[in-house]
Amino acid sequence: MREVAARVVVPGRARGPALISADPISFLGDVDIRSGRIVGELESVANASLAGTVLFFPASMGSAGAWRFIYQLHVHGTHPLALVPLGMPDPSVVQGAMLAGIPVLTEPALPPEDWLRNGDPVEVDGEAGVIRLLREEGLP
Image (tube, rainbow, N blue to C red; front, side):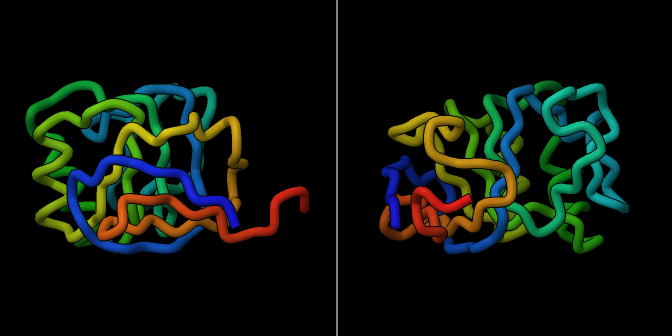
């Protein structure tokens, strides 16, 4: 099992499949809150569902109202289980995650593309400040 250190922004724990976006995400315009699907023109995650995933993304874009959309994803049960922005997240994203009870870890010690693939089972431990790969390394 691989553990990668990360900075805790919103504590909590979650387990789910990794969803890795190479594109910044606007929760206001790129995500359909009812389905949790990416509807924006984000090539790396086109039409993927955020629901039940651990979302790795470079940054968020857009509105100071992102917190409402993240919270509405939670209300509809279409939210990611954890957020892992590669840099410090927008305060509105943090606010939405706090309201929805979604852990946020940032600045992982290794870029996700170096040790993860989409769908890999991961655990975000916002108490210990680590992200764990739950599959044996070297396995498909």
